[in-house]
Every structure is written in C-alpha cells, then in structure tokens.
Length: 309
Ligand SMILES: Nc1ncnc2c1ncn2[C@@H]1O[C@H](COP(=O)(O)OP(=O)(O)OP(=O)(O)O)[C@@H](O)[C@H]1O
Ligand SMILES: O=c1ccn([C@@H]2O[C@H](COP(=O)(O)O)[C@@H](O)[C@H]2O)c(=O)[nH]1
Image 1 (cartoon, protein in one colour):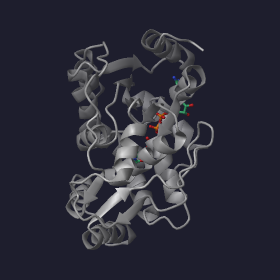
Image 2: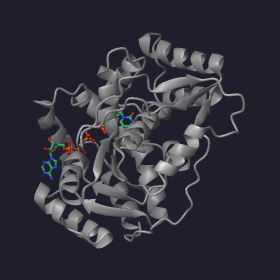
Image 3: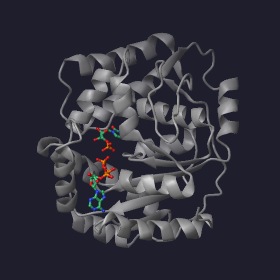
C-alpha cells in the first residue's frame, strides 16, 4: 500500500536544490545483448505474478528468442514522427535486428546519436499515478518550449500501432499496472527524442525503476533534475476515478489503480529517493488547484532557465 507518510518524510529529506549535472555523457554502445533483454523481461515479471502462458508471455519469449538468434539489437530511430509537441508511434518496429560482429565497437549510428543528444536537457517528471504530471507538463510545453514525452502515452501508441510485436505485451502490462521491459520504453523515448530534432525534454512517468534510470542515463543522456509531484494517495485515487469516467484507459479502474499505487510505492518511489540523495529533485505539492501547482512549478523553471516566454 502506498504510504504517503513515507513519501513525505523521505521526500522532506531530499535536497531542494538542483545540481546541474556536469557529468560527461557516457554514451555507450546502445546494443542490447540477448541476455540483457532476457534479464529485463525476467526482472520485469519477477516482482509480479508470473505471466500466464498467453500472448504476453509468448511475446516476451519471442523477443528473447529473436535476441538470441540475431545476437544484438540496435534501437532504431527510423520513422518516428513527432507532430508538434505530441508524440506518435513510430511506424516501423522499434527494435531492429542488427548483426553485430563485436558489441564493444560502437557503430556509426551510435556516434551520430551521441552527437545529436550531446546538448540535450532531460528533466524527469515523476509522481504517483494521477498526481497531475501530464497536466503540468502541458503548461511547461506552452511556457518554456519543452517537448513533452509521456512514456505511458508512447507505450499506449505502440500498443495500438498496427503490426506492433509488443502490442499485446504492453496491453497486459498496463492493465496489470506492471512496468514494461525497459528496452521497449527506452527505445520509444530515444526514437522520439532523436526524431524531434529538439534538445529540451520533459520525460513524464519514466524512469519507474532504478535499473531504468541507470540504463537511460548511461545509454541516452543524463537527466538534469527530477521534478517530483507529491500527492496523497486518496487525492490521486479521486482524480483517477474521475478521469476514468471519460479517459477510456484500461487502467483507470479501482483494480488497476490499486496495483499501480503498489508499484509506485515499492518500485518507483526509490528512484525519486535516489535522485533526492543526489540533490537532483525539485518537489512540488500537487494537492491544490492546477494553477496553484503550476505557479510553484513556474517559479522553479523561471529560476533555472531564466526565461518566461
Ligand atoms: N491540481 C489538480 N487538481 C485537480 N485535478 C487535477 C489536478 N491536476 C490534474 N488533475 C486532474 O487529475 C487527473 C489526472 O491528471 P494527469 O493526467 O495530469 O495525471 P498524471 O500524473 O499524468 O497521471 P498518470 O500517471 O496516470 O498518467 C486528470 O483528470 C486531471 O485533469
Ligand atoms: O516508463 C513506463 C511508463 C508507463 N508504463 C506503463 O504504462 C502505465 C501507464 O503509465 P502512465 O504514466 O500512468 O501513463 C503504467 O502503469 C505502466 O504499466 C511503463 O511500463 N513504463
């Protein structure tokens, strides 16, 4: 059960300042071995009930088998099409098989990717389900020119993309409130970042797990800071149930919400604590009306980016 007391007390100890990361971008070869994908699939399912032998499990198995036979994968930015500040699913498979002779030798594509993401600013926007992350991101897009990438939206779009080999897997994970294997999510995010040609991103609802945070920062780009929207569970529950009346989301119902709260407390909140310990978290209470919340968010961004369009 999500403990807002735990969230509050831990978060209270988080430093409120931002450390602008001067760490060199340690882009490494972006190829994932069969064992990496296998481990990811295993760890993603290990904290949850074993997947039933159905399309979900078959898809994980297929992904693993494909990795085993072709050796490595390179995340491909092909055909991802950003439309204004919205994201749409790439129209080609997100994991392209690549015959790599030696995984330790970065490809030309890796070098190009590294260069194009060199000056990129990434802000992780985290908080419990229904805290209001998407609502506040829309304000920041309008006022500060960020590109908003919601990991959940990208996964839902990929789920709907005709011919997606991950559609069924994503569907099951979302309904169960479980965390989709990070290879899929990171590929979707990276594709969108590269295809946008922009350099300022709000990454909403990701990373949801420590290994995702570490892998993204190593393979894509380090985050500048995390914007954490703190909200008590009962407030989030009310908002999600209300949203569920019209959202059409398969996880805006009491069963899925309960599971999502549990995953947030047990698995995702430690990511916020991790960045808090590094002094890289800005916490904003999300309890008040949206405009009041945004006034606080805006103050932070005005200070950090010295601009107010
Ligand atoms: N400060 C607020 N006060 C009241 N309602 C809000 C507030 N912020 C957002 N909402 C409403 O609560 C619901 C959830 O907001 P939103 O979709 O922005 O949350 P989220 O954190 O992005 O959710 P999720 O994690 O499920 O994607 C929406 O219906 C939104 O209109
Ligand atoms: O990085 C991510 C983001 C999301 N998911 C899955 O999607 C749902 C919905 O996410 P929202 O942020 O609420 O839109 C989430 O419960 C996960 O099942 C994910 O796996 N990884």
